[in-house]
Amino acid sequence: MIARRYRSIYTRRALIAGLAMVVLTPRAKAADLQTFEKSKLVIETATGKYPFTIELAVTDPQMEQGLMFRRELAADAGMLFEYAHPMTITMWMKNTYIPLDMVFMGPDGKVVDYHERAVPFSLDTIASKAPARAVLEVNSGTVQRLGIQVGDVVHHPFFNNATN
Image: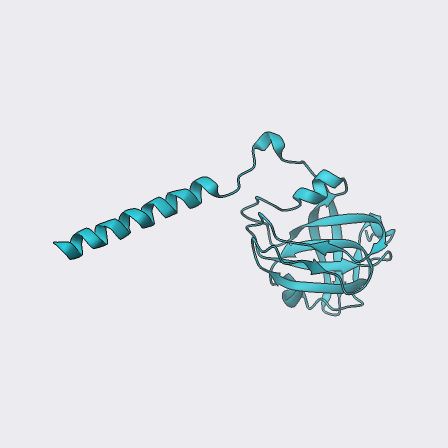
C-alpha cells in the first residue's frame, strides 16, 4: 500500500510537470508572426547545383523571428537573412524547434563559413568565423548532404549572381 501511494505521488508530479511544460512552452500568436517573401536560390558545390525555395528575412522583426516556432521545413527550403554590409553574424536557436545548418556568405555569395547541426532551443551564440553579408538557414544535415564547403557559391539576386 505504501509503495502504491509513493508511486501515485510521483505519477501525479510527473503529470503536473508535463502539463506545465505544455503551458509554458513558447507559442506565438498567428497575429504576432512575421510573413516572409519567397524567392529561389541555387547552392553550387563541387557535386552540383541545388535549387532551394527560400524565405527572405530582411527587416529587423523578420530577422528576430527567423524560423522560430516552425515545426517543419522542406528539404529544399530555407531562410536567407540579408545584412547591409559584411560583419560577424551571430545567431541562436531560441524558440526554434527544427535542428538547422547555417551557411554564411560574403557579398559575392561565396561561402565563408558554416555551422552544422545547431541544437533546437539552444541559447548558445553561433557566430561566423569570417565577415559575412548573409546567412542561409537550412535543415540540419544539408551541409553534409550537399558537400558544402568554404568557397562554394550561393546564387541569388541579393548577391547579383542569380542563375537562370
